[in-house]
Length: 346
Image (cartoon, rainbow, N blue to C red; front, top):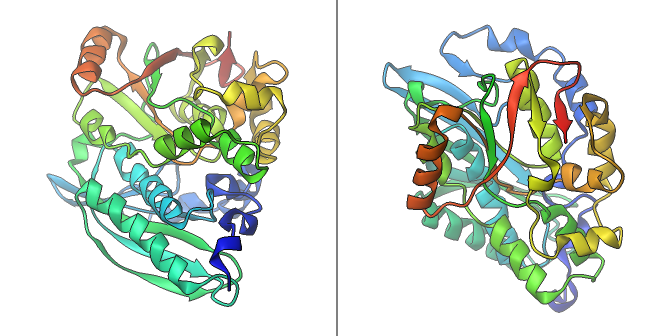
């Protein structure tokens, strides 16, 4: 086994969150999900909705959040793969308004193809991110299999009144996003050996950035809904928020932020194949997305930013708090009364 010649991404047909099961297929798999959620009234958020994590009430003042997330390599560096996968899994807890308390690792490794020592490096990357988040990587489970896979099962806590689902938006709410888009495009440029050094650095920075601000947003009553942007692209997650709330979201297309340099790759038609998968799933639920613009809306993100629905009466207060928290966010649209489509781009 010669580690110098190993590229982890060569084992990834769909890297990072881009390897998710297509939306239509997932819906068929989960066709009977509602009946499961009705078994326990303490299950506050289960798989009857398309939310980021499950939430179970422990007491009047405490609820437990649980999520699991893992994927195949999005980068070749084992340490960065571990960091990105861990940050992505933690994001699901923060997207519910909660705080993670500990995590367990999930590891699959082709021990006959890739040196097992590299798996240890992946774990170290995951452990570092958990340390930054202030939680222990308590244990985990590993298997020998044909594909390298890493992720976490994360347990978190939240006050029941602070839970933020992806279904709580109200008519008139403003919608913000906390990270620019384009991680899927950059990951594809990496796999094709087309990425510039500075753009690779940007991808690593954004993909390993922990969405800790979600716990802060959970304490704000005027934040009505929240979710993180992952493999279904920003369009898919906007559709879920709009349909969950029974509303339509109007998006200012020019206000959607892209990571610097991403547009250059899009212009060269460098983007993930799963971009079209997302477009095929959600195009009928949207209008106003023209031509190559579909890449921006459908690019599968790995550990993307948070989508946050905010009461418009508190816009100035929210933006002031963002500044104090040194957190960037872009205002991209608003929720309106329900129309025939879920996402309207102007």
